[in-house]
Image 1 (cartoon, rainbow, N blue to C red):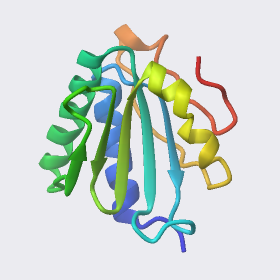
Image 2 (cartoon, rainbow, N blue to C red; image 1 turned 135 degrees about the vertical axis):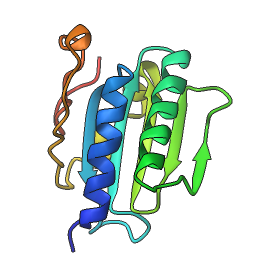
Image 3 (tube, rainbow, N blue to C red; image 1 turned 90 degrees about the horizontal axis):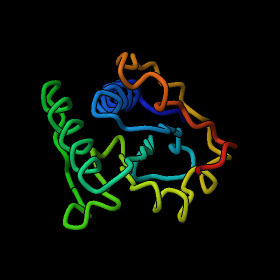
Length: 138
């Protein structure tokens, strides 16, 4: 069973919102065959705690516009790793140090990667690259 169309729509909208707030190294995985609790994991890196918060807020605002609300949100006190649960999709916004330490993409690399179609704003075109399932995080 593959990720639902709804989960994929949420994923694309969240990815675009993250890029708009200078989120980087986006990776999305279809985890529907491995987990019964969600269809997609979206992983995003931010360079500092303030940016983690901005990315999280940007995603939440954008998804509210299309009628999606978080069911659970954890980690926003420290803004080092914030998890946002939308049932069909779970978003992990991680500080670059947590991203390197926990390396979630290695844990889920045997799941199908989801291609993200995002428009990178001109000012951030250089540092915002997609992270493939086998790429290392700096």
